[in-house]
Image: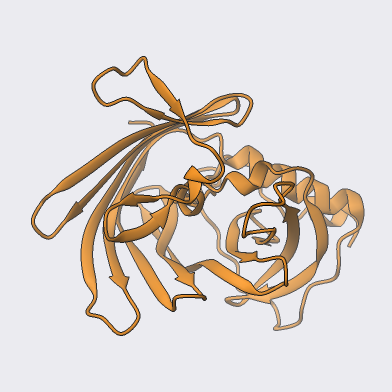
Length: 268
C-alpha cells in the first residue's frame, strides 16, 4: 500500500486510543470529528503490507491519539482466577493526557466498597511516578520492576498492563498486516532493552483505518506468549466512541480480567 493510498483511508480527526487502560489504561476511545464511521470491511482478505513510510505514519498517528486531554472513564471489572470463583470490582479513571505528560487517577473498589486510589504521573522523559496520597508534591519513581506490581490487592492488573510503558521502549518495528475482529490491521514490535525483564518483546496490533490499538501481546525471551490485552468491541457514549469491553489474559497463570465500560466522557 502506498502512503497516499493509506492517508486517503485514515480520518485524521481527534480520537483516543490508549490502553488502558491504554488503557490502561488505559485507553482506546475513538472520536473522529465527533462521528465514528466504522466501515464494514469490503472482504475478509488480509490487507496489503505497508511500506516503511506508511507504517510509520500509522504508528505516529496512534501515539498522537493518546494526547486526548482530560477524560473520565468508569466501568466494572470481573477477575477470573484459574480454578477459583470470579471476583467483581469497579474501576474509574480521571485523567489528563497531554503530548508531554500524563496524569491518571485510578480508583478500584471491591464488592465491600473498599476503595484503592492511586495517582500516576508520566513526565516528558516517559518516567513513571506514583504521587504520595498525603503530600501530592512528593512523587515516587516506579522502576520497570515496580511497574509489574498490581494496582490493588487480589486484582492482578499491573501498571504495565494499565499504562503500557512499552509503547516508549524505542522505535516500533513494522512486521506486517493481519485481520483482527473483522478489521484490517497491522502489527508492530517493540523490544525491551532491560535484559533482566521477563517481558522481552511486545507486539501491538493497530486498526488500519483509525490507528487504534486492537491487541497487544507480550513475549518472553523464548518467544512464548505471556500476556495478551485485547479489545472485544466498541460503543458510543454521547458523541464519543470507546471500547465497550477489554480483556487482559495471563497465558502463564490462565487468569483473565474483563473490563466492561459503563461511562466515558471527554474534556470534563
